[in-house]
Image (tube, rainbow, N blue to C red; front, top):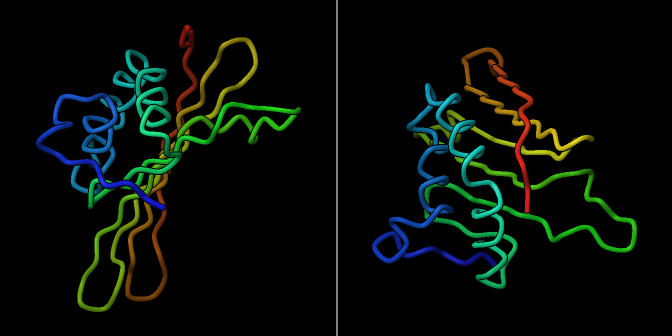
Length: 136
């Protein structure tokens, strides 16, 4: 079950701010997303888990934070996954997805995939950055 976050109540929460940064309306903000994650990664994850949910939605962006690894299952190192889509009269016209993975030695990979619907075939672009983020 997805929990919707009340934008009025959560307007200054790390997860609400993050969902706005990664939505389809902010496509030129990859560096801003990276900077925000460098400062707030664990705050976002802890906040979502504090809702007693793994997936929250603000009506524009879905934010998924898998549970902490247990029993040898690392979830592939996935810490955060987001999805935001724009729709037109003929269906989905744009999809923006972020995946944040924990790598070895405290490194974090931040990956953005954007798929735009085109007349003949979809057009995909990707941004990837690996950063060091001290985690609690």
